[in-house]
Length: 361
Picture (spheres, rainbow, N blue to C red):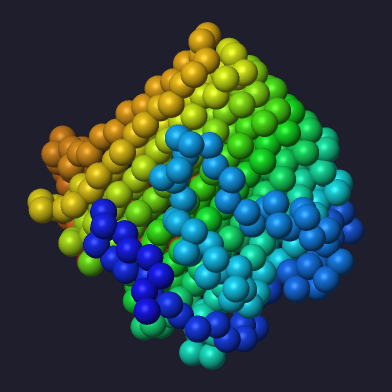
């Protein structure tokens, strides 16, 4: 039985039975400043109304078509088998980071993960989350809820690098309090099918949200990415700046929605999607939308699809690079600002190597 169909990329999400999952690890260089629990342990004592509120889908009328759908959400609620609760209660150092690593494999090939992150008021923190491994038939459906306290700052990097034959689904919700700041880098380079939806609720005034999606859709992969900026507070800034590459027979859709709601005076919402197209015949789409019912605001959107510039290829090839290497250098340059934010040297170098290999094919 299939639980959902996605016509834009012509895929159906199967009904996958849950099973135990035991391949998640945690590391932090500032453990004395945070609380980390297995999600099942956390839920035993968590306020049930709070949890129900996180999981319930209450959308404004014009947001009704956002998200992955109620069937995907209910499927995850019924089958969750892993996840974590992370509360960072004191600021960590600039070079400190907390990392969570999920590894799919032969015995851990089905993951329904529920994750909650709380950043306390006036706290600054760096978090890296990594998904890797898997095999043909591996399946992951994940959920995140992130609370940003007043005057807090979170640098969050999330890497999805599952096996090319895996399926990846993800819903993530950010709630931003007054004067909070978020820098979010979702890096998507794995999975044969990947469907993601991120919604950021800027409920406080003077919030600053910067989202930098990075994607590589190669071979016969199909990807549908959605980012929603929902701006309610005054004097706030929301930016989505997506960059990536589509090659071979990949199919990619990127939906960027900016909601400038009543009460968000003097706020700014911007969306842009820049896709490098590596060869003819590729199916790539961007769907930017702005909804506005407030004055004295700025809403902007942009989308571009372009091949690599012959002048840049010519420049590099005249300096000793062959064509494949020149193409790799130009595309990888878009990924490096986010990858350099990853303070885990082993993970960063592994990702750089895998991106190199995919671009050289």
